[in-house]
Length: 145
Image 1 (cartoon, rainbow, N blue to C red):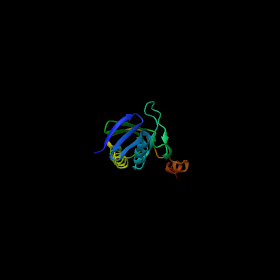
Image 2 (image 1 turned 60 degrees about the vertical axis):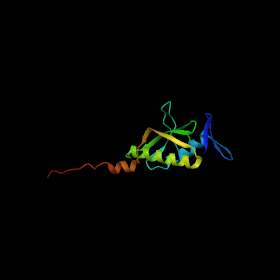
Image 3 (image 1 turned 180 degrees about the vertical axis):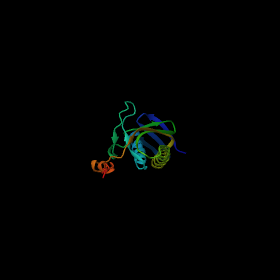
Image 4 (image 1 turned 135 degrees about the vertical axis):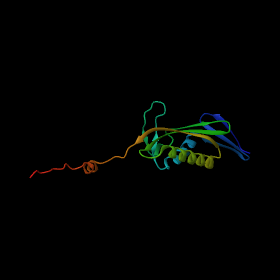
């Protein structure tokens, strides 16, 4: 049976029969980020946990907005996201939790005990000026004869 233990705050070590495998927390965070942004309704990752500054991040910084804690035999993941307006948040959160657990466990062999989701913002659909003009009702002019 494989045994995983915490060595430093930056790595997770998994002992195998042939040796050990060391995972940097950044690797686990990137795996979790890739799984999270593929869920429909997720507009992006949020960069600010502590200071509340929500910065919409693209696919370049997938580990931003993700915090990984490694225990003696398990991993906990905290994810801060921005959701698209009008999407059901509980459904999105559950889909993220399942996808992240599956991705991290499959790719690393580490057991994920919890995936905590923090909704940091909502992205509204941007409308162009042309669409806004089309949405405004025309003024009705009535003539009295």
